[in-house]
Amino acid sequence: MPFDNMPVVGVPTCLRAVKGRVFHGVNERYPRALIDAAGCLPLLIPAIGSRVDVCVLLDRLDGLLLTGSPSNVHPSHYGAEPSHPEILHDPERDATTLPLIREAIRRDLPILAICRGVQELNVALGGSLHQAVHDVNGHKDHRARYELPIDEMYGPVHPVTLRGQLRDWVGRDEIMVNSLHWQGISRLAKGLKPEAVAEDGLVEAVRGPDDAAFCLGVQWHPEWAAKSNPVSTLLFRRFGAAAKGHDSG
Image (cartoon, rainbow, N blue to C red; front, side):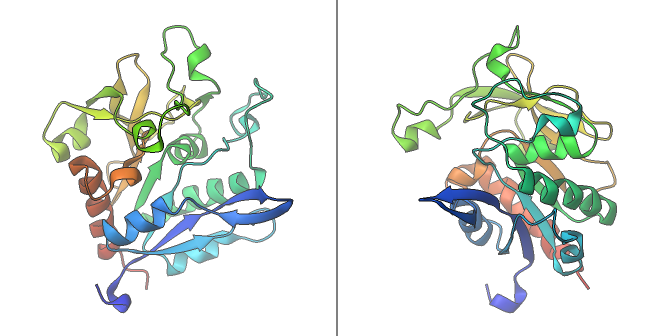
Protein backbone atom coordinates (compact mmCIF):
# COMPACT_ATOMS: atom_id res chain seq x y z
CA MET A 1 0.00 0.00 0.00
CA PRO A 2 1.40 3.46 -0.88
CA PHE A 3 2.60 5.35 2.16
CA ASP A 4 0.29 8.31 1.60
CA ASN A 5 -2.79 6.07 1.54
CA MET A 6 -2.13 4.35 4.85
CA PRO A 7 -4.26 5.35 7.85
CA VAL A 8 -2.15 6.56 10.77
CA VAL A 9 -2.66 4.68 14.04
CA GLY A 10 -1.26 5.93 17.33
CA VAL A 11 0.49 3.36 19.53
CA PRO A 12 1.26 4.54 23.08
CA THR A 13 4.61 3.28 24.34
CA CYS A 14 5.88 2.13 27.73
CA LEU A 15 8.85 3.35 29.73
CA ARG A 16 11.41 0.55 29.95
CA ALA A 17 14.81 0.51 31.60
CA VAL A 18 17.59 -1.14 29.58
CA LYS A 19 21.05 -1.29 31.16
CA GLY A 20 20.39 1.71 33.33
CA ARG A 21 18.83 3.86 30.61
CA VAL A 22 15.12 4.51 30.09
CA PHE A 23 13.52 4.07 26.68
CA HIS A 24 10.05 4.62 25.23
CA GLY A 25 9.24 1.28 23.62
CA VAL A 26 6.69 -1.17 22.26
CA ASN A 27 6.96 -4.82 21.25
CA GLU A 28 7.67 -4.94 17.52
CA ARG A 29 4.80 -7.39 16.94
CA TYR A 30 2.28 -4.55 17.25
CA PRO A 31 3.67 -2.23 14.54
CA ARG A 32 4.24 -5.26 12.34
CA ALA A 33 0.62 -6.39 12.72
CA LEU A 34 -0.64 -2.89 11.96
CA ILE A 35 1.37 -2.73 8.75
CA ASP A 36 0.98 -6.31 7.53
CA ALA A 37 -2.57 -7.18 8.65
CA ALA A 38 -4.36 -3.85 9.09
CA GLY A 39 -2.65 -1.83 6.34
CA CYS A 40 -1.99 1.04 8.76
CA LEU A 41 1.02 3.19 9.53
CA PRO A 42 1.96 3.03 13.24
CA LEU A 43 2.90 6.25 15.00
CA LEU A 44 4.54 5.66 18.37
CA ILE A 45 3.35 7.98 21.13
CA PRO A 46 5.89 8.55 23.93
CA ALA A 47 4.72 8.04 27.51
CA ILE A 48 4.78 11.73 28.45
CA GLY A 49 1.19 12.24 29.53
CA SER A 50 2.09 13.88 32.82
CA ARG A 51 4.13 16.53 30.97
CA VAL A 52 1.98 17.53 27.98
CA ASP A 53 -1.56 17.09 26.72
CA VAL A 54 -1.06 14.24 24.25
CA CYS A 55 -4.72 14.39 23.26
CA VAL A 56 -3.78 17.02 20.67
CA LEU A 57 -2.26 14.11 18.72
CA LEU A 58 -5.71 12.70 18.06
CA ASP A 59 -6.33 15.42 15.47
CA ARG A 60 -3.79 13.66 13.25
CA LEU A 61 -4.71 10.04 13.94
CA ASP A 62 -7.11 7.63 12.26
CA GLY A 63 -7.05 5.05 15.06
CA LEU A 64 -5.57 4.10 18.41
CA LEU A 65 -3.95 0.76 19.25
CA LEU A 66 -3.48 0.01 22.96
CA THR A 67 -0.88 -2.70 23.45
CA GLY A 68 0.03 -5.27 26.03
CA SER A 69 2.92 -4.61 28.40
CA PRO A 70 4.87 -6.14 31.29
CA SER A 71 3.39 -3.34 33.41
CA ASN A 72 -0.17 -2.95 34.70
CA VAL A 73 -2.56 -0.07 35.32
CA HIS A 74 -1.90 1.36 38.76
CA PRO A 75 -4.81 0.38 41.05
CA SER A 76 -5.18 3.94 42.32
CA HIS A 77 -7.00 4.65 39.05
CA TYR A 78 -9.86 2.40 40.16
CA GLY A 79 -9.80 3.17 43.88
CA ALA A 80 -7.60 0.32 45.12
CA GLU A 81 -4.18 -0.22 46.65
CA PRO A 82 -1.43 -2.37 45.10
CA SER A 83 -1.88 -5.94 46.31
CA HIS A 84 1.32 -7.58 45.02
CA PRO A 85 4.73 -5.91 45.33
CA GLU A 86 6.07 -7.81 42.31
CA ILE A 87 3.49 -6.30 39.91
CA LEU A 88 5.08 -3.68 37.64
CA HIS A 89 3.47 -0.28 37.11
CA ASP A 90 4.13 2.48 34.59
CA PRO A 91 2.63 5.78 35.82
CA GLU A 92 3.70 7.67 32.70
CA ARG A 93 1.89 5.21 30.45
CA ASP A 94 -1.22 5.50 32.63
CA ALA A 95 -1.02 9.29 32.41
CA THR A 96 -0.79 9.00 28.62
CA THR A 97 -3.29 6.28 27.75
CA LEU A 98 -6.19 6.96 30.12
CA PRO A 99 -6.86 10.53 28.89
CA LEU A 100 -6.23 9.41 25.29
CA ILE A 101 -8.87 6.68 25.58
CA ARG A 102 -11.54 9.00 26.98
CA GLU A 103 -10.91 11.63 24.33
CA ALA A 104 -10.68 9.06 21.51
CA ILE A 105 -14.07 7.66 22.48
CA ARG A 106 -15.54 11.16 22.64
CA ARG A 107 -14.27 11.74 19.09
CA ASP A 108 -15.36 8.27 17.88
CA LEU A 109 -11.80 7.38 16.90
CA PRO A 110 -11.42 3.63 16.13
CA ILE A 111 -9.79 1.77 19.05
CA LEU A 112 -8.29 -1.71 19.24
CA ALA A 113 -7.15 -2.61 22.77
CA ILE A 114 -5.01 -5.68 23.53
CA CYS A 115 -4.18 -7.24 26.94
CA ARG A 116 -3.09 -4.29 29.11
CA GLY A 117 -4.97 -2.20 26.57
CA VAL A 118 -8.36 -3.76 27.32
CA GLN A 119 -7.66 -3.26 31.03
CA GLU A 120 -6.85 0.41 30.35
CA LEU A 121 -10.05 0.77 28.34
CA ASN A 122 -12.09 -0.64 31.21
CA VAL A 123 -10.39 1.53 33.86
CA ALA A 124 -10.56 4.70 31.74
CA LEU A 125 -14.35 4.32 31.55
CA GLY A 126 -14.82 3.65 35.27
CA GLY A 127 -14.33 -0.11 35.63
CA SER A 128 -12.00 -2.04 37.93
CA LEU A 129 -9.52 -4.92 37.68
CA HIS A 130 -8.53 -8.10 39.44
CA GLN A 131 -4.86 -7.48 40.24
CA ALA A 132 -4.12 -11.23 40.29
CA VAL A 133 -6.79 -13.32 38.58
CA HIS A 134 -5.21 -16.56 39.82
CA ASP A 135 -5.83 -15.48 43.43
CA VAL A 136 -9.55 -14.87 42.87
CA ASN A 137 -11.81 -17.69 44.00
CA GLY A 138 -13.38 -19.43 41.02
CA HIS A 139 -10.92 -18.13 38.44
CA LYS A 140 -8.16 -20.08 36.74
CA ASP A 141 -4.51 -19.18 36.32
CA HIS A 142 -4.21 -17.06 33.17
CA ARG A 143 -0.51 -16.27 33.49
CA ALA A 144 2.11 -16.88 30.81
CA ARG A 145 4.12 -20.09 30.98
CA TYR A 146 7.62 -18.70 30.57
CA GLU A 147 9.21 -22.14 30.71
CA LEU A 148 7.83 -22.86 27.22
CA PRO A 149 9.40 -21.84 23.90
CA ILE A 150 7.99 -18.45 22.92
CA ASP A 151 5.89 -19.77 20.03
CA GLU A 152 4.23 -22.25 22.39
CA MET A 153 3.81 -19.63 25.11
CA TYR A 154 1.84 -17.47 22.67
CA GLY A 155 -0.14 -20.42 21.33
CA PRO A 156 -3.84 -21.03 22.05
CA VAL A 157 -4.48 -22.56 25.47
CA HIS A 158 -8.14 -22.10 26.40
CA PRO A 159 -11.53 -21.44 24.77
CA VAL A 160 -13.65 -18.32 25.03
CA THR A 161 -17.34 -18.11 24.25
CA LEU A 162 -18.18 -15.29 21.85
CA ARG A 163 -21.15 -12.97 22.07
CA GLY A 164 -22.74 -10.09 20.19
CA GLN A 165 -20.93 -8.39 17.35
CA LEU A 166 -17.71 -10.36 17.79
CA ARG A 167 -19.60 -13.64 17.38
CA ASP A 168 -21.28 -12.24 14.26
CA TRP A 169 -17.91 -11.21 12.81
CA VAL A 170 -16.20 -14.52 13.52
CA GLY A 171 -19.20 -16.72 12.65
CA ARG A 172 -18.55 -19.10 15.57
CA ASP A 173 -19.66 -19.40 19.17
CA GLU A 174 -16.23 -20.37 20.49
CA ILE A 175 -12.57 -19.85 19.65
CA MET A 176 -9.26 -20.80 21.26
CA VAL A 177 -7.03 -17.97 22.52
CA ASN A 178 -3.64 -17.53 24.13
CA SER A 179 -3.29 -16.35 27.73
CA LEU A 180 -0.43 -14.30 29.20
CA HIS A 181 -1.94 -12.04 31.84
CA TRP A 182 -2.00 -11.64 35.62
CA GLN A 183 -4.79 -9.08 35.68
CA GLY A 184 -8.28 -9.04 34.24
CA ILE A 185 -11.58 -7.21 34.27
CA SER A 186 -13.41 -7.24 37.59
CA ARG A 187 -16.20 -4.63 37.41
CA LEU A 188 -17.08 -3.94 33.79
CA ALA A 189 -17.23 -0.23 32.98
CA LYS A 190 -20.54 1.35 32.08
CA GLY A 191 -20.83 1.55 28.32
CA LEU A 192 -18.76 -1.59 27.64
CA LYS A 193 -20.38 -4.86 26.63
CA PRO A 194 -18.85 -8.32 27.11
CA GLU A 195 -18.04 -9.94 23.76
CA ALA A 196 -16.07 -13.00 24.93
CA VAL A 197 -16.01 -14.91 28.22
CA ALA A 198 -13.57 -17.60 29.42
CA GLU A 199 -14.68 -20.86 31.00
CA ASP A 200 -14.14 -19.42 34.48
CA GLY A 201 -16.37 -16.42 33.73
CA LEU A 202 -13.58 -13.89 33.16
CA VAL A 203 -14.52 -11.31 30.54
CA GLU A 204 -11.96 -11.65 27.73
CA ALA A 205 -13.32 -9.21 25.15
CA VAL A 206 -15.39 -6.04 25.30
CA ARG A 207 -17.06 -3.75 22.81
CA GLY A 208 -17.55 -0.03 23.26
CA PRO A 209 -20.67 2.08 22.78
CA ASP A 210 -23.17 0.87 20.17
CA ASP A 211 -22.69 3.98 18.07
CA ALA A 212 -18.88 3.72 18.04
CA ALA A 213 -17.22 3.28 14.66
CA PHE A 214 -14.90 0.61 16.13
CA CYS A 215 -14.09 0.04 19.78
CA LEU A 216 -12.95 -3.47 20.66
CA GLY A 217 -10.76 -4.78 23.43
CA VAL A 218 -9.43 -8.34 23.78
CA GLN A 219 -7.52 -9.89 26.67
CA TRP A 220 -5.53 -12.23 24.43
CA HIS A 221 -2.76 -11.39 21.93
CA PRO A 222 -3.96 -11.39 18.29
CA GLU A 223 -0.83 -9.50 17.19
CA TRP A 224 1.24 -12.66 17.64
CA ALA A 225 -0.36 -14.44 14.67
CA ALA A 226 -1.92 -11.48 12.91
CA LYS A 227 -1.44 -12.95 9.43
CA SER A 228 -1.76 -16.69 10.12
CA ASN A 229 -4.64 -16.92 12.62
CA PRO A 230 -7.96 -16.23 10.81
CA VAL A 231 -9.58 -14.53 13.81
CA SER A 232 -6.52 -12.37 14.46
CA THR A 233 -6.41 -11.37 10.80
CA LEU A 234 -10.12 -10.55 10.88
CA LEU A 235 -9.73 -8.26 13.91
CA PHE A 236 -6.83 -6.31 12.43
CA ARG A 237 -8.47 -6.03 9.00
CA ARG A 238 -11.70 -4.71 10.52
CA PHE A 239 -9.75 -2.25 12.64
CA GLY A 240 -7.76 -1.15 9.58
CA ALA A 241 -10.97 -0.65 7.59
CA ALA A 242 -12.43 1.47 10.39
CA ALA A 243 -9.24 3.55 10.54
CA LYS A 244 -9.29 4.00 6.77
CA GLY A 245 -12.88 5.19 6.99
CA HIS A 246 -12.03 7.75 9.65
CA ASP A 247 -11.44 11.30 8.49
CA SER A 248 -8.58 12.80 10.49
CA GLY A 249 -9.12 16.07 8.71
